[in-house]
Length: 534
Picture 1 (spheres, one colour):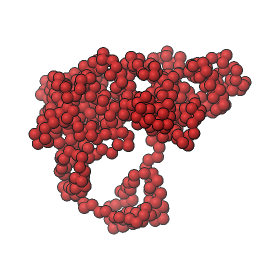
Picture 2 (cartoon, helix red, strand yellow; picture 1 turned 90 degrees about the horizontal axis):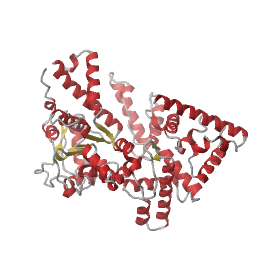
Picture 3 (tube, helix red, strand yellow; picture 1 turned 30 degrees about the vertical axis):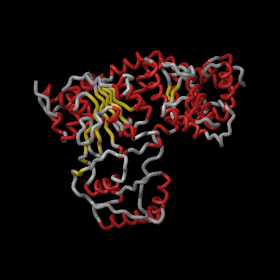
């Protein structure tokens, strides 16, 4: 058997210091392009390979699904390359494709599959699939472990129905979107409807609290959660059930959090509870075979509008660390070597960000040379800006035979800004392509398919049923759906129980009844097929 490769040799000194940290707290201040993903993935590899930590005891939280996928892929490749040397004495590139596939499969089965890597929402959803039935809400709402997850547009539809139809409020004065935002903001701060009313002791506060309470009741009646619930309910469950918290505290002995500057208060509470088992942070000192490893940069905090709180990162040293100055601390490492940008760009960025007063000082150093100088043009308006950019593109394309229009990209912050650029490009007959549009999961056809799948998995999901009952069109109008839903509300049962009851449906007009019965029969047959194959 061959000796494993020294993967730590691929790290710079600061990255290596972070990766080799074993137990206890560590804050990694990682500037843009400083190799933070490498530090995270190599740390996980070091925990497993050097310290023999069981992969199922490692929890890694990322900010996006894309980051989670990238982390899993990098870890899988890292372990596969190790196994190539250990089992075959060869570099990965020298293995036959069939052997590479076999090694990757082995790594996935024994390591990657056991690691808990994902976003806060994905990880909390997994926890709730185990334990949500042990949760006791103040309002008496209950959920089962086959709950559905509603997206933002469906959540807004529920709020609008409550505001307009249930509470008979003026939707211009109490705009459903602003009500939904207020509810989301409250959840991100860990506030219940009662807390909202207490913090806003006025008429609007009472209305928000009332809409919030009815919204939660509607979700529970549909056995559904929104994205904010996925974080809030585990936190509340951990606080009320020591046994549940104790299990997950014991399970996750090494916790890693990416983009720590973008966490909100509820996410922070979740991590704190998992790390300390409910003990106050300043009293917790049981770091035997346990660690909390967070990576972030207050300079990159841009999500305060989503309740992100960069002071959570700023307070890490007081919460978990030794609280010593930057030059003396053993619980903070700074990654300051930048592998992405040139020196001119970094110098401008450093000088700009130095004006921030609330930050942990760091200076990014370039590894890619000086680079091109930065040019800033101050335009009078959006039209002037667009024509300046297009003239620059025309000039560069005409004077450089190696360039084509396909070598240029125009970046803008909002879709509305594209109009001026498009008009200028059209005027000068420059071919272009607008990249973007609706995100995949926001497309109507995708949301319709997902609603069908949710309804199959959870027939009590009235929100999804209402979306698909006449999609594609099958002659079931809004009036028919409203009548069926009102009947369900009067009986305090789910809409599906009315739809699937032939006697109830036959009270409708002939054509509508036939269409509803056909829809219910179709859904029931699909459910039977799913159950027979699962």
